[in-house]
Image: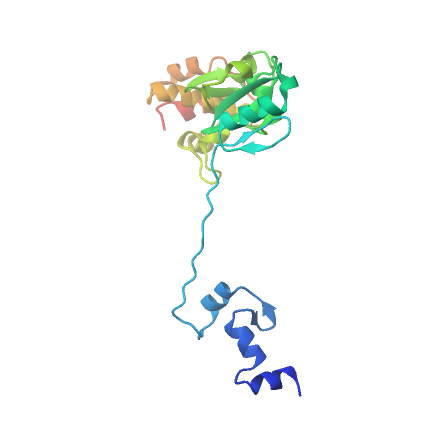
Length: 239
């Protein structure tokens, strides 16, 4: 006697049992939620499936030496002082970047541009001249356009820093990014992030700038492709 025959003698076949449990349909293993939603006649039609959403806190405080994570800055600093007493000469700074606090170990000579790219992987901030002459590395610091290659990271604690990554949610462009796109205000694109951040800084204090006001705002920026006219068009008059 087969297993199915033995089970049928108890009033239900093995396949029916597995089907009712939501485990097998056509020989494939699936979850009960998928089974209940796809089967035309469920054993418990009134059963509802509740999905839980896990929310991850935005702020993360990580010991820069041993990598342990702590819920608050104070707990991380206390752990750091106790666990690494020899590291008293290491500089720690907490940077507010795109609304998220990052506590990092930095050298006294690390620029904000270096930290954004090398420690946080925010490669939208480009580095070209590294001397404050091209504007490619521009970010907003307390809503003011700033060359990140000229600012030491250790001095940026307590500032609200916004990079090009902070303007979009990853799927929908911000209004100024969309206007750059609509006006073809880029060619190779390397300098584009810097122009957008400079334009955004201007729009925060002057929502409807004239072409001459835009030219003044981006006067510290270089575009090797020479696409200045379309950049000016993208910012003039606001978004």
